[in-house]
Length: 176
Image (cartoon, rainbow, N blue to C red; front, side, top):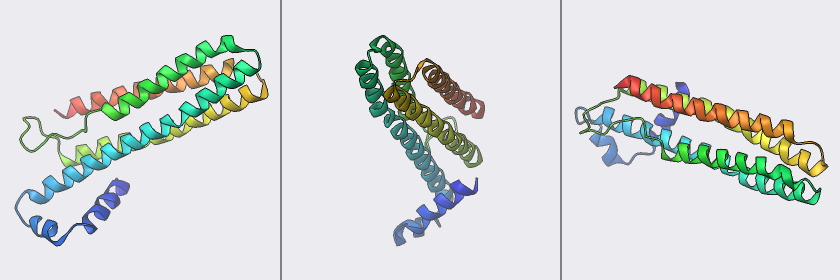
């Protein structure tokens, strides 16, 4: 929670004098804080997607390594990993922002919005783990080592990440 608050404070400190004056309008300050938190959540999810996009190069290198070592038949499994990775990226980039606008019927309070941000922030650890697994897969394919176990690990980690992110929708639905 303090991580989000420190980022919101940093956004506040960069406001112009006019934006600071607007905060004295009743109700406006809370609305702006929610909007800033919503934007931070959006940026975080885009960062998660961008981190997963880094795996595209690792996937191409793995397929190339497998091809060079005569194990091209294993690339079918790599194609499945590529599709799962792409699915995760699409989910992160297209997910709802976790906050209703000023005139929407369903409102989400700021504390609940902070919980959504914390949930998304926790996914960063999972994404870093997946990136490490892709790196190990790439290294093993370059060394000519059997890759089946790493492929299974990456596949399972991507499935778990998708499941956790689907749980995010349940979290959002519980707020309405």
